[in-house]
Amino acid sequence: MTGRESLRAIYETIRYLEKDAELAGADSVATYLRLAAIEADNLILEIDDVKTKATRRRKSPPPK
Image (cartoon, rainbow, N blue to C red; front, top):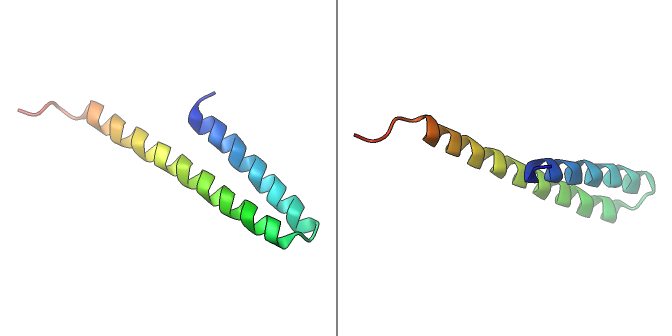
């Protein structure tokens, strides 16, 4: 499992817990879980951005 896949699993778990907290009426807990989910999603986007930049570098011709 890659780091991105692990983060995606953590993100999904946090979202699941957030929904449970909302249903239980624990709004402050749900808010903190929502913030944690946003941070996990941001990390996933950063990983994707780094991969994209690395792929572009490999495909670009060498400097002349």
